[in-house]
Image (cartoon, rainbow, N blue to C red; front, side, top):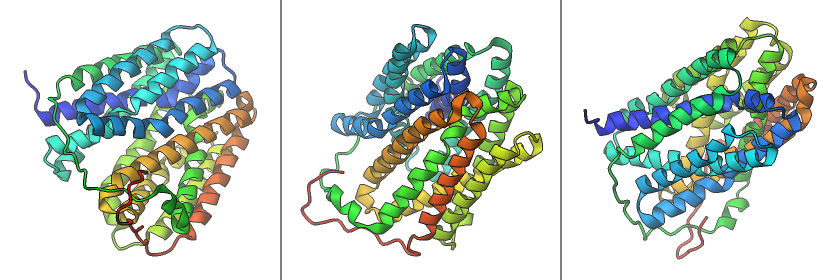
Length: 394
C-alpha cells in the first residue's frame, strides 16, 4: 500500500518525536543505571545539548547549498543512528559522550528540513500542516507513557532498544519521501550580524529566553530520577510528563486566540512568572501527587504560550527574508546554549539527589529573572532594518 505525502509526513513526525519521548524523560535514569554520578550526567547532557548550538545552522547551510533537504535528512538520520549505537556499548564515560554527541549533532539535521519539506508537500496549507504535525505530539505522549511502563519492567536498557526502533522507523520513512529541490533565493541579502546586538530589546528578549531555557534543565535532565527517589513508579513519571505534553497541545491549539489582541510583553512575563511558581511547586510540593500533577499543567504556559510569544517576537523583529536565520539563531543560542549551560549547572547542584530541591529553586530564580527581562521589553516590537547591499551572513 502506497502512503500519501500527508501519511508519510505524519509517520515521520511520529517517529521523530517518539525518539524524543524516550530520550528526554529517561536519559537521566539510563545514565544513572550506568553508574554515572550527577556531575557526570550534567556534563554529558551539557555536551550533547551543546551540539544544538552549531548543528541547525550547519545542516541548514548544507541543505541550502545542495538544494536537497530530503537528502540532508537521510544523511543526518543515518549518522544519528550510528551515534546512537554507542548507547548499547558499556565501554566507559567518554565513548558514550562521543557517541551521543554525534547522535545529537546529526539529529538536528532532521526537524528543520522536515518542517520545510512538510510545507512544500502540503502546498503551504497551514491547516493540513497542523493536522500532520499533531502526529509528533501523539508519538511523544505514547512513548513517554509506554517508556515508563517499559522501564519499570525491564530497567535502564529499555532506552537504547526502544529509541533504536523508532530511529529505524524514521530512516525507513525518510526513504519514502520523494526528493525535491529548493528554490535558490539568491536575491535575499542578510544584514550584518553585529547590528542585532545594538538593539536593547533583542538583547533583553534573548537573555530572557536563555535563562528560561536554563530553568528547564533540572526538569529535562533529572525529573524522572527525582520522582523515582520520591517513590513514584516509572509509569507514574511517564503519566506526569504526558500530562504536561497534553497541556502543551491544548495550549498550542488555542495559542492564536490567546495571543490575539494581547500584549506579548505582559503575556511572556506571565508565562515566565508561572514557570517560577511551577519549579517551586516541584521543589517543595512534589510529595503530593495531585500538586505535582498541577505543576505539570503549567507547562501550557511554561512552554506552549511562552514559545508562541517568542515566535511572535522573531516574526515581527526579523524581516521576512531573514526569519529562517532568526529561527536558527534562536534555536542555537537558546535551546543549545541555554540548555547546555543549564544542564551543566544542574548536574553540579543536584549532588546525586541531595541538592534536588535546591536545583529546582535555582530554576525558579532563573525563571524570575526571565520574567523581569520580559516585562522590561517594549510594548511594540520594532523590526530590525536590513542595510542595503549588506552581504555578511548571520
